[in-house]
Length: 234
Image (cartoon, rainbow, N blue to C red):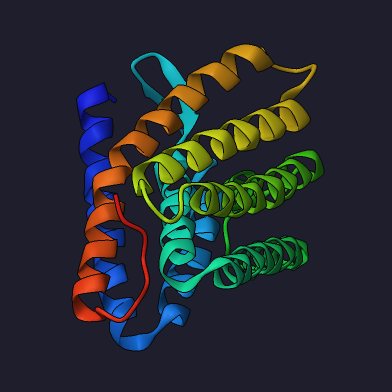
């Protein structure tokens, strides 16, 4: 995949997420928390496919997962810290339920008419490696919690101004933590950890920079529709 294609797909996904923000205005924060949880699960499902972006190898879920930080930042900005923490807990719970469900399904005996090739392919795609599962859940819990904490810390220090600073700073730090924790725990001793961390983090950092205008757009739309809501400036 060319870098231009990667950027294009990222922008399309960002636009779709921004649309859910508009929907959330009518139906409440539960809608966007639900979308957030779904995206975290989807990122795990499609992660089995590896893509190459400008010679950097990354899981196909890198775009979807990176954008979940945009959602927690929006929830933090509009609905507050507790709502953002609720989103993280919901996302973590959704992933645990998904992983346990997949593990159970893998134990079931397939129907007699199901071919061995299909069953083998299914197990290969959805087969769960304990080390990978642990790394994924650990990285998710630490990085997403850090994102909420740092976002609100900067918000307090800047008196609610300069949204772009807290968005980019919290996301950049949290993405680094997520990438370093996951790759180190999952691949230490079996793959070039440092190269994987640097390459994937650069892609995630690019997404973080691209999402800033969309976060502003989402907050501005929400503020226009609900002018009594106290959101950050700058």
